[in-house]
Image: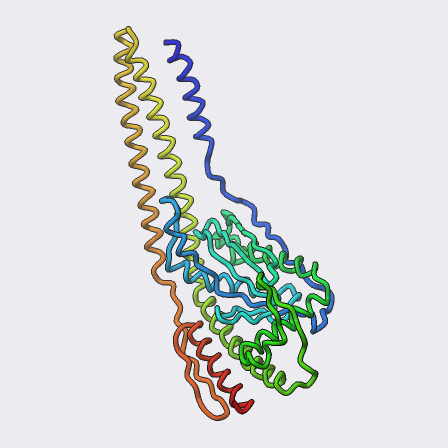
Length: 392
Protein backbone atom coordinates (compact mmCIF):
# COMPACT_ATOMS: atom_id res chain seq x y z
CA UNK A 1 0.00 0.00 0.00
CA UNK A 2 2.88 2.38 0.67
CA UNK A 3 4.06 1.96 -2.91
CA UNK A 4 0.51 2.60 -4.11
CA UNK A 5 0.28 5.86 -2.14
CA UNK A 6 3.62 7.08 -3.47
CA UNK A 7 3.17 6.01 -7.10
CA UNK A 8 -0.32 7.30 -7.86
CA UNK A 9 0.34 11.00 -7.06
CA UNK A 10 3.49 10.89 -9.18
CA UNK A 11 1.57 9.30 -12.04
CA UNK A 12 -1.19 11.89 -11.81
CA UNK A 13 1.44 14.68 -11.89
CA UNK A 14 2.96 13.17 -15.05
CA UNK A 15 -0.44 13.07 -16.71
CA UNK A 16 -1.14 16.72 -15.96
CA UNK A 17 2.28 17.67 -17.33
CA UNK A 18 1.45 15.82 -20.55
CA UNK A 19 -1.97 17.49 -20.74
CA UNK A 20 -0.24 20.85 -20.53
CA UNK A 21 2.00 20.14 -23.55
CA UNK A 22 -0.39 21.52 -26.16
CA UNK A 23 0.60 22.72 -29.61
CA UNK A 24 0.66 26.51 -29.62
CA UNK A 25 -0.67 28.59 -32.50
CA UNK A 26 1.13 31.73 -33.67
CA UNK A 27 -1.11 34.75 -33.29
CA UNK A 28 1.17 37.57 -34.45
CA UNK A 29 1.31 38.74 -38.06
CA UNK A 30 4.51 40.79 -37.71
CA UNK A 31 6.89 40.47 -40.67
CA UNK A 32 10.62 41.31 -40.74
CA UNK A 33 11.06 44.22 -43.19
CA UNK A 34 13.43 43.98 -46.14
CA UNK A 35 16.61 46.05 -45.80
CA UNK A 36 16.71 48.52 -48.67
CA UNK A 37 19.89 49.66 -50.39
CA UNK A 38 19.89 53.45 -50.46
CA UNK A 39 23.25 54.02 -52.18
CA UNK A 40 23.96 53.70 -55.88
CA UNK A 41 26.17 50.68 -56.59
CA UNK A 42 28.75 50.95 -59.42
CA UNK A 43 28.05 48.66 -62.37
CA UNK A 44 31.31 46.77 -61.81
CA UNK A 45 30.17 45.81 -58.30
CA UNK A 46 26.50 45.12 -59.00
CA UNK A 47 26.10 41.37 -58.63
CA UNK A 48 23.54 39.32 -60.53
CA UNK A 49 21.77 36.52 -58.64
CA UNK A 50 20.62 33.20 -60.03
CA UNK A 51 18.16 31.17 -57.97
CA UNK A 52 17.96 27.56 -59.02
CA UNK A 53 14.73 25.63 -58.75
CA UNK A 54 14.76 24.17 -55.25
CA UNK A 55 15.30 20.55 -54.37
CA UNK A 56 11.81 19.35 -53.34
CA UNK A 57 13.39 17.01 -50.79
CA UNK A 58 11.60 13.93 -52.10
CA UNK A 59 14.54 11.66 -51.27
CA UNK A 60 14.23 12.51 -47.60
CA UNK A 61 10.47 12.08 -47.37
CA UNK A 62 10.91 8.35 -46.83
CA UNK A 63 12.91 9.08 -43.67
CA UNK A 64 10.16 11.15 -42.06
CA UNK A 65 8.09 9.81 -39.20
CA UNK A 66 4.55 8.59 -39.75
CA UNK A 67 3.05 11.81 -38.41
CA UNK A 68 4.82 14.00 -40.98
CA UNK A 69 2.57 15.52 -43.62
CA UNK A 70 3.83 15.77 -47.18
CA UNK A 71 2.66 15.43 -50.76
CA UNK A 72 5.21 14.75 -53.52
CA UNK A 73 3.08 16.49 -56.16
CA UNK A 74 2.90 19.68 -54.16
CA UNK A 75 6.57 19.56 -53.19
CA UNK A 76 7.52 19.51 -56.88
CA UNK A 77 5.25 22.50 -57.53
CA UNK A 78 6.65 24.37 -54.52
CA UNK A 79 10.21 23.81 -55.80
CA UNK A 80 9.50 26.38 -58.54
CA UNK A 81 7.04 28.50 -56.56
CA UNK A 82 9.33 29.38 -53.65
CA UNK A 83 12.32 30.53 -55.78
CA UNK A 84 10.08 32.90 -57.72
CA UNK A 85 8.76 34.50 -54.54
CA UNK A 86 12.34 34.83 -53.29
CA UNK A 87 13.31 36.46 -56.60
CA UNK A 88 10.51 39.01 -56.26
CA UNK A 89 11.59 39.80 -52.70
CA UNK A 90 15.26 40.21 -53.64
CA UNK A 91 14.30 42.63 -56.38
CA UNK A 92 12.61 44.92 -53.85
CA UNK A 93 15.89 45.42 -51.95
CA UNK A 94 17.52 47.38 -54.82
CA UNK A 95 20.85 45.84 -53.80
CA UNK A 96 21.47 43.61 -56.82
CA UNK A 97 21.71 43.54 -60.57
CA UNK A 98 19.48 41.09 -62.38
CA UNK A 99 17.78 38.51 -60.15
CA UNK A 100 16.47 35.47 -62.01
CA UNK A 101 15.16 31.97 -61.43
CA UNK A 102 17.57 29.86 -63.48
CA UNK A 103 17.70 26.29 -64.81
CA UNK A 104 20.05 23.81 -63.18
CA UNK A 105 22.62 24.11 -65.98
CA UNK A 106 22.81 27.89 -65.67
CA UNK A 107 25.61 28.21 -63.13
CA UNK A 108 27.77 30.97 -64.63
CA UNK A 109 26.20 33.63 -62.45
CA UNK A 110 27.72 36.07 -59.97
CA UNK A 111 25.83 34.65 -56.99
CA UNK A 112 24.05 31.30 -56.99
CA UNK A 113 21.29 30.47 -54.51
CA UNK A 114 20.20 26.87 -54.09
CA UNK A 115 17.61 25.55 -51.69
CA UNK A 116 15.98 22.43 -50.33
CA UNK A 117 12.47 22.16 -48.95
CA UNK A 118 12.65 20.44 -45.58
CA UNK A 119 9.06 20.96 -44.43
CA UNK A 120 5.98 22.56 -45.91
CA UNK A 121 2.48 21.78 -44.67
CA UNK A 122 0.64 25.10 -44.61
CA UNK A 123 1.49 25.69 -40.96
CA UNK A 124 5.28 25.42 -41.05
CA UNK A 125 7.79 26.17 -43.81
CA UNK A 126 11.43 25.14 -43.42
CA UNK A 127 13.99 25.79 -46.17
CA UNK A 128 17.70 25.01 -46.25
CA UNK A 129 19.47 27.69 -48.30
CA UNK A 130 23.03 27.62 -49.66
CA UNK A 131 24.70 30.63 -51.28
CA UNK A 132 27.95 30.61 -53.28
CA UNK A 133 29.54 33.06 -55.69
CA UNK A 134 31.33 32.65 -59.01
CA UNK A 135 34.73 32.45 -57.32
CA UNK A 136 33.65 29.25 -55.56
CA UNK A 137 33.38 31.04 -52.21
CA UNK A 138 30.73 29.56 -49.94
CA UNK A 139 28.79 32.46 -48.43
CA UNK A 140 26.67 30.44 -46.06
CA UNK A 141 24.27 27.56 -45.58
CA UNK A 142 21.38 28.32 -43.27
CA UNK A 143 18.02 26.87 -42.30
CA UNK A 144 15.06 29.23 -42.39
CA UNK A 145 11.81 28.43 -40.66
CA UNK A 146 8.53 30.23 -40.13
CA UNK A 147 5.25 29.21 -38.56
CA UNK A 148 2.18 30.75 -40.15
CA UNK A 149 -0.07 32.90 -38.02
CA UNK A 150 -3.55 31.62 -37.25
CA UNK A 151 -4.77 34.75 -39.08
CA UNK A 152 -2.76 34.09 -42.26
CA UNK A 153 -5.59 32.28 -43.99
CA UNK A 154 -8.42 34.45 -42.68
CA UNK A 155 -9.71 36.26 -45.76
CA UNK A 156 -11.54 38.84 -43.64
CA UNK A 157 -8.22 40.01 -42.16
CA UNK A 158 -7.02 41.16 -45.62
CA UNK A 159 -3.43 40.25 -44.76
CA UNK A 160 -0.65 39.82 -47.36
CA UNK A 161 -1.31 36.75 -49.50
CA UNK A 162 1.98 35.05 -48.64
CA UNK A 163 1.90 33.52 -45.13
CA UNK A 164 5.64 32.81 -45.20
CA UNK A 165 6.90 36.16 -46.52
CA UNK A 166 9.07 36.35 -43.40
CA UNK A 167 11.25 33.54 -44.79
CA UNK A 168 11.96 35.36 -48.06
CA UNK A 169 12.60 38.64 -46.26
CA UNK A 170 15.12 37.04 -43.91
CA UNK A 171 16.96 35.32 -46.78
CA UNK A 172 17.05 38.64 -48.65
CA UNK A 173 18.44 40.46 -45.61
CA UNK A 174 21.08 37.81 -44.95
CA UNK A 175 22.28 38.01 -48.55
CA UNK A 176 22.45 41.79 -48.32
CA UNK A 177 24.37 41.74 -45.03
CA UNK A 178 26.88 39.20 -46.34
CA UNK A 179 27.41 41.21 -49.51
CA UNK A 180 28.23 44.22 -47.32
CA UNK A 181 31.15 42.30 -45.79
CA UNK A 182 32.87 42.12 -49.20
CA UNK A 183 35.31 44.74 -50.44
CA UNK A 184 34.65 46.51 -53.78
CA UNK A 185 37.63 44.63 -55.27
CA UNK A 186 36.04 41.30 -54.25
CA UNK A 187 32.73 42.26 -55.86
CA UNK A 188 34.50 43.19 -59.09
CA UNK A 189 36.44 39.93 -59.02
CA UNK A 190 33.21 37.93 -58.70
CA UNK A 191 31.82 39.60 -61.83
CA UNK A 192 35.05 39.03 -63.77
CA UNK A 193 35.23 35.35 -62.89
CA UNK A 194 31.54 34.86 -63.70
CA UNK A 195 32.12 36.24 -67.19
CA UNK A 196 35.30 34.22 -67.73
CA UNK A 197 33.60 30.99 -66.59
CA UNK A 198 30.88 31.61 -69.17
CA UNK A 199 33.50 32.27 -71.83
CA UNK A 200 35.40 29.12 -70.90
CA UNK A 201 32.23 27.01 -71.22
CA UNK A 202 32.00 28.09 -74.89
CA UNK A 203 35.67 28.17 -75.78
CA UNK A 204 37.80 26.11 -73.36
CA UNK A 205 40.92 26.35 -75.53
CA UNK A 206 40.75 30.11 -75.76
CA UNK A 207 39.85 30.99 -72.18
CA UNK A 208 41.04 28.15 -69.94
CA UNK A 209 44.33 29.96 -69.32
CA UNK A 210 42.54 32.98 -67.91
CA UNK A 211 41.36 31.09 -64.82
CA UNK A 212 42.81 28.70 -62.26
CA UNK A 213 40.88 26.49 -59.88
CA UNK A 214 42.35 25.03 -56.69
CA UNK A 215 41.49 21.74 -54.99
CA UNK A 216 38.76 23.43 -52.96
CA UNK A 217 37.02 24.60 -56.13
CA UNK A 218 37.94 28.26 -55.72
CA UNK A 219 38.77 30.29 -58.85
CA UNK A 220 41.43 32.93 -59.34
CA UNK A 221 42.05 35.18 -62.33
CA UNK A 222 45.37 34.54 -64.10
CA UNK A 223 44.87 37.28 -66.65
CA UNK A 224 42.05 39.33 -68.11
CA UNK A 225 41.28 39.67 -71.84
CA UNK A 226 42.55 42.84 -73.45
CA UNK A 227 40.12 45.71 -73.84
CA UNK A 228 38.20 45.26 -77.08
CA UNK A 229 39.31 41.63 -77.47
CA UNK A 230 37.16 40.45 -80.44
CA UNK A 231 36.70 36.98 -78.93
CA UNK A 232 35.41 38.51 -75.71
CA UNK A 233 33.09 40.77 -77.67
CA UNK A 234 31.53 37.71 -79.31
CA UNK A 235 31.25 35.96 -75.94
CA UNK A 236 29.41 38.94 -74.50
CA UNK A 237 27.00 38.94 -77.43
CA UNK A 238 26.34 35.24 -76.85
CA UNK A 239 25.84 35.88 -73.14
CA UNK A 240 23.28 38.58 -73.90
CA UNK A 241 21.33 36.06 -75.97
CA UNK A 242 21.56 33.61 -73.11
CA UNK A 243 20.17 36.23 -70.74
CA UNK A 244 17.31 36.96 -73.13
CA UNK A 245 16.28 33.31 -73.14
CA UNK A 246 16.50 33.05 -69.36
CA UNK A 247 14.39 36.21 -69.17
CA UNK A 248 11.69 34.48 -71.23
CA UNK A 249 11.75 31.70 -68.65
CA UNK A 250 10.93 34.32 -66.00
CA UNK A 251 7.70 34.95 -67.89
CA UNK A 252 6.96 31.23 -67.72
CA UNK A 253 7.70 31.07 -64.01
CA UNK A 254 5.59 34.18 -63.49
CA UNK A 255 2.58 32.67 -65.29
CA UNK A 256 3.11 29.44 -63.39
CA UNK A 257 3.15 31.17 -60.01
CA UNK A 258 0.15 33.33 -60.93
CA UNK A 259 -1.85 30.29 -62.01
CA UNK A 260 -0.76 28.29 -58.99
CA UNK A 261 -1.32 30.98 -56.37
CA UNK A 262 -5.09 30.67 -55.90
CA UNK A 263 -5.41 26.85 -55.71
CA UNK A 264 -2.19 26.64 -53.70
CA UNK A 265 -3.40 29.21 -51.20
CA UNK A 266 -6.63 27.22 -50.86
CA UNK A 267 -4.63 24.05 -50.29
CA UNK A 268 -2.46 25.70 -47.67
CA UNK A 269 -5.49 27.09 -45.86
CA UNK A 270 -7.11 23.66 -45.79
CA UNK A 271 -3.81 22.02 -44.93
CA UNK A 272 -3.26 24.43 -42.03
CA UNK A 273 -6.67 23.60 -40.60
CA UNK A 274 -6.13 19.88 -41.07
CA UNK A 275 -2.67 20.00 -39.46
CA UNK A 276 -4.05 21.77 -36.39
CA UNK A 277 -7.01 19.37 -36.20
CA UNK A 278 -4.80 16.33 -36.61
CA UNK A 279 -2.37 17.41 -33.91
CA UNK A 280 -5.21 18.24 -31.56
CA UNK A 281 -6.68 14.80 -32.18
CA UNK A 282 -3.33 13.11 -31.67
CA UNK A 283 -2.77 15.05 -28.46
CA UNK A 284 -6.20 14.02 -27.16
CA UNK A 285 -5.45 10.41 -28.09
CA UNK A 286 -2.18 10.53 -26.16
CA UNK A 287 -3.90 12.07 -23.13
CA UNK A 288 -6.65 9.44 -23.27
CA UNK A 289 -4.04 6.68 -23.26
CA UNK A 290 -2.22 8.23 -20.30
CA UNK A 291 -5.43 8.54 -18.30
CA UNK A 292 -6.36 4.98 -19.21
CA UNK A 293 -2.95 3.70 -18.18
CA UNK A 294 -3.24 5.48 -14.83
CA UNK A 295 -6.64 3.91 -14.23
CA UNK A 296 -5.32 0.45 -15.02
CA UNK A 297 -2.28 0.87 -12.75
CA UNK A 298 -4.45 2.22 -9.94
CA UNK A 299 -6.81 -0.69 -10.44
CA UNK A 300 -4.00 -3.23 -10.31
CA UNK A 301 -2.73 -1.80 -7.05
CA UNK A 302 -6.25 -1.68 -5.60
CA UNK A 303 -7.00 -5.23 -6.75
CA UNK A 304 -4.02 -6.41 -4.73
CA UNK A 305 -5.51 -4.88 -1.60
CA UNK A 306 -6.82 -7.36 1.00
CA UNK A 307 -10.14 -5.50 1.23
CA UNK A 308 -12.89 -6.97 -0.92
CA UNK A 309 -14.32 -3.55 -1.67
CA UNK A 310 -10.94 -2.30 -2.81
CA UNK A 311 -10.47 -5.32 -5.05
CA UNK A 312 -13.88 -4.72 -6.63
CA UNK A 313 -13.03 -1.06 -7.21
CA UNK A 314 -9.73 -2.11 -8.71
CA UNK A 315 -11.44 -4.43 -11.19
CA UNK A 316 -13.75 -1.61 -12.28
CA UNK A 317 -10.77 0.75 -12.65
CA UNK A 318 -8.88 -1.73 -14.86
CA UNK A 319 -11.93 -2.16 -17.09
CA UNK A 320 -12.49 1.60 -17.31
CA UNK A 321 -8.84 2.19 -18.05
CA UNK A 322 -8.89 -0.31 -20.87
CA UNK A 323 -11.91 1.43 -22.38
CA UNK A 324 -10.21 4.83 -22.21
CA UNK A 325 -7.08 3.47 -23.89
CA UNK A 326 -9.20 1.96 -26.66
CA UNK A 327 -10.85 5.36 -27.13
CA UNK A 328 -7.40 6.88 -27.47
CA UNK A 329 -6.51 4.47 -30.27
CA UNK A 330 -9.83 5.29 -31.94
CA UNK A 331 -8.76 8.93 -31.95
CA UNK A 332 -5.48 7.88 -33.62
CA UNK A 333 -7.58 6.35 -36.38
CA UNK A 334 -9.56 9.60 -36.65
CA UNK A 335 -6.33 11.60 -37.07
CA UNK A 336 -5.42 9.26 -39.92
CA UNK A 337 -8.64 10.34 -41.63
CA UNK A 338 -7.38 13.93 -41.51
CA UNK A 339 -4.12 12.85 -43.14
CA UNK A 340 -6.04 11.11 -45.91
CA UNK A 341 -8.17 14.22 -46.38
CA UNK A 342 -4.97 16.22 -46.89
CA UNK A 343 -3.68 13.77 -49.47
CA UNK A 344 -6.85 14.26 -51.52
CA UNK A 345 -6.09 17.98 -51.72
CA UNK A 346 -2.72 17.50 -53.43
CA UNK A 347 -3.61 16.10 -56.84
CA UNK A 348 -4.07 19.10 -59.15
CA UNK A 349 -0.86 21.19 -58.99
CA UNK A 350 1.43 20.68 -61.97
CA UNK A 351 3.13 22.86 -64.55
CA UNK A 352 3.38 22.54 -68.33
CA UNK A 353 6.08 24.48 -70.13
CA UNK A 354 4.99 25.57 -73.56
CA UNK A 355 7.14 24.97 -76.64
CA UNK A 356 9.48 27.86 -77.48
CA UNK A 357 9.85 28.95 -81.11
CA UNK A 358 12.84 31.27 -81.58
CA UNK A 359 13.61 33.16 -84.79
CA UNK A 360 17.34 33.43 -85.53
CA UNK A 361 18.99 35.24 -88.42
CA UNK A 362 19.35 32.11 -90.53
CA UNK A 363 16.75 29.70 -89.11
CA UNK A 364 13.83 29.05 -86.85
CA UNK A 365 14.33 26.72 -83.91
CA UNK A 366 11.83 24.95 -81.69
CA UNK A 367 12.58 24.04 -78.09
CA UNK A 368 10.44 21.56 -76.20
CA UNK A 369 10.41 19.62 -72.95
CA UNK A 370 11.09 20.73 -69.42
CA UNK A 371 12.81 23.97 -68.47
CA UNK A 372 16.13 22.20 -68.02
CA UNK A 373 15.74 20.31 -71.31
CA UNK A 374 14.93 23.48 -73.23
CA UNK A 375 17.82 25.37 -71.69
CA UNK A 376 20.21 22.52 -72.53
CA UNK A 377 19.01 22.64 -76.16
CA UNK A 378 19.44 26.42 -76.17
CA UNK A 379 23.01 26.25 -74.90
CA UNK A 380 23.92 23.81 -77.68
CA UNK A 381 22.44 26.21 -80.23
CA UNK A 382 24.43 29.11 -78.74
CA UNK A 383 27.61 27.05 -79.01
CA UNK A 384 26.85 26.44 -82.69
CA UNK A 385 26.29 30.17 -83.21
CA UNK A 386 29.57 30.96 -81.46
CA UNK A 387 31.50 28.48 -83.62
CA UNK A 388 30.00 29.98 -86.77
CA UNK A 389 30.90 33.51 -85.62
CA UNK A 390 34.53 32.60 -84.97
CA UNK A 391 34.79 30.54 -88.15
CA UNK A 392 35.20 27.11 -86.52
